[in-house]
Length: 134
Image 1 (cartoon, rainbow, N blue to C red):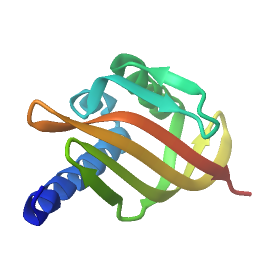
Image 2: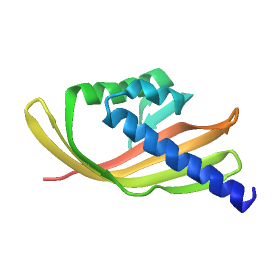
Image 3: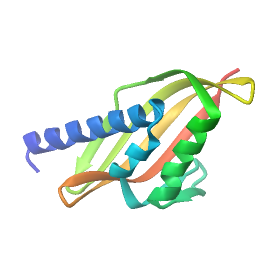
């Protein structure tokens, strides 16, 4: 892969991550369907499967935003690495929200694995490392 091609792929993944977060933050989790592979998996930091399949993973975002009122969300610029048709991307975040009358804050890292299929990048795997703040 040429350096300009690799740079272009990295830019595409940066934009996908921006659009993923924009979708759920703006209350449109249905937009995530275009960024997720049919067999995407969300796993916990101890590698337990939290959700498998596009519909279930999109629903996890939807469930969260219908129950929580996001008060603040900040993320760093993603670190992206590309190898042929595989890429990884990770970034740190800080978030504050209210749910069921209680306030919450957490910070952590979001980690994605992408595959390049049929001319586009799709997220196939996601792990969220987070630590509640007091």
